[in-house]
Length: 385
Image (cartoon, rainbow, N blue to C red; front, side, top):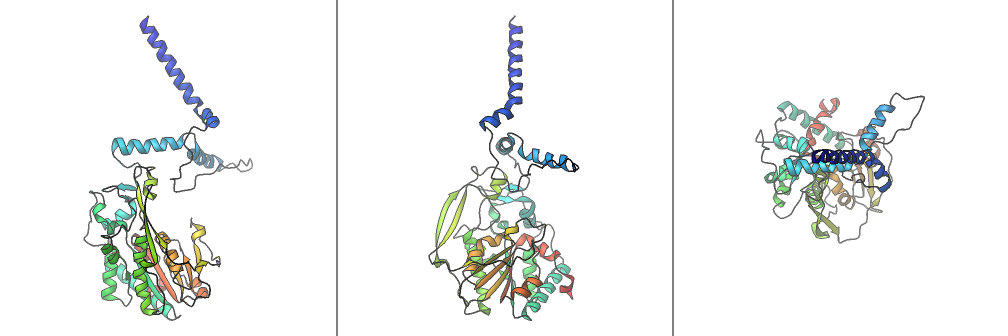
């Protein structure tokens, strides 16, 4: 009799559990129990497709993508998976993120792979890059434009002491070191080296985010000062900013980009370093020329950014950028009379048409260290003649 009663109780529990699972989406619709869309997702979720009975070929695939992004309790399951893998199994739930020492996170598939230097530039590669840079230097000089290029160092190149213990360098040098040394020895083009000063200053300040690949505002300012030292040699009357023009504020915040990838922003707090101007800002947003944006470029509103200082006599600059330049935009905007920022889909090219139309005094490329191969891959054939 007792055995029959136990079986009966188990059946009721299982039946109740089954019904609960079946009706959970209904309860969620009424009571909004599930976690809303995660702000941590670094992409746009699929939208619900419209039904067009005359064209149904793509509807199943589009609806499947929509359902996978929006089914009930999806975000709760993502958070549960992240917590289980990190806290129970001790592994990263996201293959692109590697946990370093003392709470530092690194982008594994790009930045750490570049740090390992498994593959280096060949002598032929270096000569090709130097030839292209020299071609550009002459092309700009012929038009009265000064050409510069600065390389923003990878976080792992500056904070090697925090990278995961299993990551090691295959070679004793890096692609950036190769290019810098080759240009110094065999080229007329001078690369602006910001890595050395940032490496020296890190003992005094935190210059990169612990939970994001990028430098913080202070690290970016160190780069700004070094870039402007070089530019000022050609434009001695240019007025540059110094760190004394700013107050520095430190704030403990939730984890940033890499922590968001893990859905663990609370578990990996970070320190935000913000610099506040002590001066009245003069630069205002300028009018875009609406240069054609490549279809494949995702951040369309950021392709072209214009700032200018009304009635300024300072030089006009055009800057080819990537995401590392975000923390530099306001600094350059307060330095040059007009500044045009172009994010040219990580190609870092000559951009002849825009240059011919803008006629800047200064043309500057700021490229992240790991993207040097992208510069190499996008060299035009005519630049090698």
